[in-house]
Amino acid sequence: MERATATDLKLDRGEPLPRGRHKLERDVVLASQRGRLITAFVRLAADRGYDKVTIIDIVSLAGTSKRTFYEHFKDKQDCLLQAFDTARMMLISAIVGEATPVTDPVDRIRVGMRAYIEALADLPDFTRLFLSESMSAGPELADRWIEATEMLSAVMHSWREESRREHPEVPELSPLRAQIVILGLNETICMTVHRDGVAAVGSRTDELVSEAVALLTAP
Image (cartoon, rainbow, N blue to C red):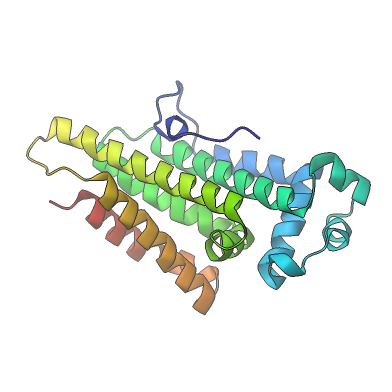
């Protein structure tokens, strides 16, 4: 699967995406045969842990065969990596779909952060799996997770720079600070999921958005 780049999140790709379109795209992706296998794998891995899931478990829950599994994935690790790429693209689609129409850079940061957090809450099994195991399930997944974090941080930084062009008195947001904010947000969500479950992320959305935006836009 082709990897996303920072350009995918810079919102300069032509016509704005309609609000909510990402949910339709997500449903189409996950309803496909490959999507059912990914969904089954992620659900099992989120519940049991990656190491305890077998391919037989995956195909049984997905209602497919082992042959079908190997038509889409080389092995379980490949399924894990493709599942992460799928989740990342759905997050990108959510952020792009919500933030594209917003013209004010500071408001765009607020809308983008809310879309990110709400998408994590809307994908509970993906969130449980990847926020807890992304740095411990092998170097390839760790590399992808780092790339995704750096990508989102770079977008927040670029939006802050746009606001400084209109308001030069606003202090610069360093790329490192943007990255620390995103990492801190992810870790807080991970702790919330571990202690209170994914549903609790939704109840904390306003608080999380407020704190993240304050850190990303503070003088």
